Length: 303
Image 1 (cartoon, rainbow, N blue to C red):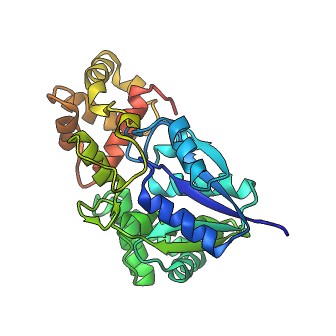
Image 2 (image 1 turned 30 degrees about the vertical axis):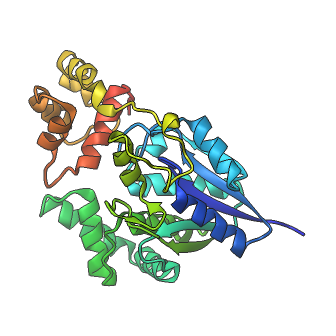
């Protein structure tokens, strides 16, 4: 009997019980399946280090049923939602997946498909609305796209996984991919501070690791397998790069746009990483946007 191919996009930062739950559900829905995971390599979508090595994440996810892995390098993994989602789905599509499974706050793939089709059929109006919010209001790109989407569809998609979900589904719709999206309702919110039964979000687990708390109820991962390397530790190196590099050269790095090089020069005497990010955040630039630009400068990745 022919098996079906299931695609997942993940960071596994770290791998936890919520991921096990998702894999078990997939196995129940499709007993005869192969699971392909497009997984971030070293850097997260927020421009941070992933807390476990690629090899360790791969090993543990395999144990729970993942068959194949696709490596998402920094040019995809540390990008805004629309680029991260699109490039990941296109990579999975090349493997011939039949279904794309993702966690979502709403758990409503039909609604996401409906929204994606409205956006596709009204692309000029949508693009105009995004431009209007970016130009007239000076808003950040995620905020502008969310407001444009609300204006066109009446839907407010502001939760992290629904934002990724709509971008996955938009890619399927816009590229006419023969892939069926399946949204699984999340057991716990993306950045939730809460723990529910044996579930905790990845960010909550990372916070627990930082405090040396017991994470064993929420993940099969051992504390010793989680790296204590923090992006904050790179700040002195980043300061040297910004101070010693002409603004014109900085402008040639990926993610640096609209005079961001001057903003970085202006704020580079901030005492530490977190203060630097905070000082650069504005209505136009979200913290995630600044963090990603920081990473690309740190790695000296050119446009």
